Image (cartoon, rainbow over all chains, first blue to last red; front, side, top):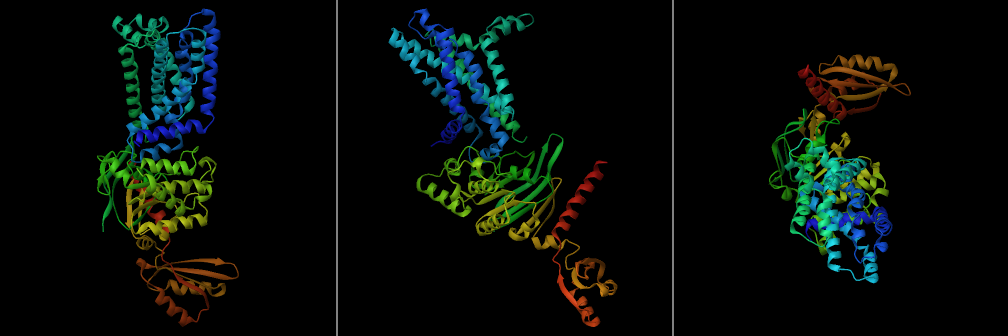
Length: 244
Length: 323
């Protein structure tokens, strides 16, 4: 078994060893239910698709993903287990990827447990299931992006509350970066090119296009490179913070 | 004998703070090296660099012939490390924790089961294998950390305060374990307990302000004491004063200390000049004056006194250079 997988297994077990996993899953399912059926009005729309279900995921993840990622490295640093882990024959890259994948697997499990919504819509109507699969894929990529950010932030502080709040704010900014609220802050002084770049970082824009069933390679590359970038930053952050 | 740890010109700076300031060290197979020094002397930092956790600012370290900076995985494979405070994942049980460490260390199947079984037996962990580590007592937590460190029977063992927080029986067990393993390994332990040096170490090293102040056998360490070869005798208090005067007059005695004990007994300690043996001369005195002596012994030297002298001198000189 590769060392990344060993880390993955341990971390995933760690989620389920405490009530965190169960609380998270219950809250996640509860909130997706509320958003989908009450605010998204899945029934009232009379359309056989899961757009009202997926549409709120960026906002849910913004709040809930930092709760999963906040412990990834803060806890290790606070408890001193980072020193133990880093003196075992394992590279930092393996550890960072293993931990990230564990958190990602965990969100995948939570996401998979929303299957009753998918059964419901198939029972009620005749939806295009390829679009729904694309939606799940997009949602998973989005969760991965938020997790990579959260994991990086968690490496910067021993305090899980700080890790949570800062990750939340950054995910929020990424969600909103296509909106006037964020863009207006830049458009008054920054050149249009920069404003365009910032707007292109919007999670919502990339997520929306996948939701429509258009799995564009550029959207996948966007999330993929975002994850890679933040995990790399995560490695650098741990290297820099090890001694403190 | 084979040189398992080799440290050359080690420096570590944290910003403007110099934690380790030029340490050279070699540890051979079969040696148990005791790291002594006040808090903040750089003991833990040095250990963290040997184990590859922290990168040195300058200097080189090799463990089992592997350079820690260029071949970290190879070096980490042949060493076991108990970090300060014995950190472990609180939500895991010792069973799952040791299993995890064994997996990372690449042990599989029968080898893994045997390694875990052996470590658990050596450390006496059987009773708590299924309890979450966070619910264990301090002593058991420390033992879980030790079990983790010796799991793969490493050639090099680095233990940062292995007996801290243990009761006297547990301390004894850990020391016996270290002595048992010593012949096949190079072991480095850090400690605040000076008797530990005598009990388990074959060599003592004193560090203060990031510098190596002393390296030698526990006997040589004690030899630095001004009490080395001092003679202490207890006599009835009424002749105490005359005993003091007589001993002080001996040519090889530099000074006399005395303390009144309970029951009209005075304990007189004669400190020799240049640590030479004075027990013969004193014995002659006793016979000559026909003193009634309750106890008489030669001191090997007081470790805490040597420790204090070495480390406070270092601090004072440090302050002088700064001012």
